[in-house]
Amino acid sequence: MEEFDRKRHNYMAIGLAIIAVSSIVIFFSGTNDIIRLAAIGGIVIGVVVAFAGGRRRRNFYRREVVPQLIKGLSPDLKYFPDKGLPQSKFRRFELFRNFDRYSSEDYLSGMIGKTGITAAEVHIEERRRSKDGDSYITVFRGIIFIADFNKNFNSRTVVVPDVAERFFGKLAGNFLQQLNWTENGKLVKLENPEFEKKFAVYSTDPMEARYILTPKLMERLLAVQAAECSPIRVLFSTSNMILAFSRSSGWLEPPEWGKLADVAVIEKTLTEIGDLLELVDDLDLNTRIWSKQ
Image (cartoon, rainbow, N blue to C red):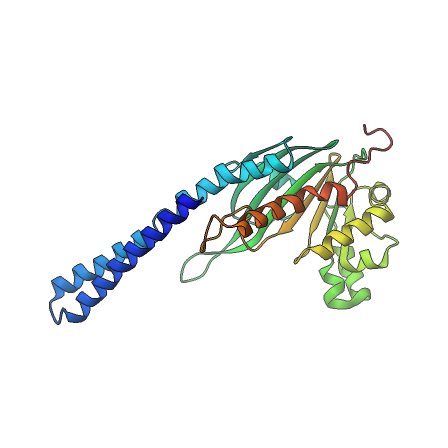
């Protein structure tokens, strides 16, 4: 990591020197277009040199440093920086339906105690057409966390942010929620006012949804939501729990600027990994009851 910092410093110094010399040439070139054009080319080269090695630096961190940190935290986990969650699998979740462009990386899988987990960073975008051309806006960028749930079930239950009640009030919000059930099933009313205020729950089997969303689990999901900077989405399907967490910046990424060989950089990555792994304990997923072993 220190070697990458030295190379980055040298590239930056050389690039800035080329830019400075080229700028001086332009200033004194007068009306000589050939010299001015060559100097502009020099500035472009200087910029390229100044930022050279950025991709190699990122790849080194993700392929060499992050696996060692994960191994130190949990030897039973495997990390694949260039592998992602398959788009076909993500679409089956139907947590986000409208998107036109998909990418995924930083695939993590293995066991935490008795619980099998999978996680990956996902970025989905929706295309917007206009007379000036197509553009893309981010629908979701963050982490998809999949864990083996500690109860067997056959239904599909989805927990989404309750935007309707937040913006239109309880009465109008409940009416709008009732209209929003198709593939996700019927609206499920639960006996936790705080949970009802934060989330709307839809299920193909309302009775089983209440079996899944116990009072303790609702409290735990509220605690997880409180710890996040943005709303979470949760799906219970095929005896798995799938959580979606938004992230504005890249997960397990080195800093674009500053030193790579810095304890703060390592601490940030360890925190990102640790927070994810602690979800197993936060949601009590290792407690096996009924027929789950």
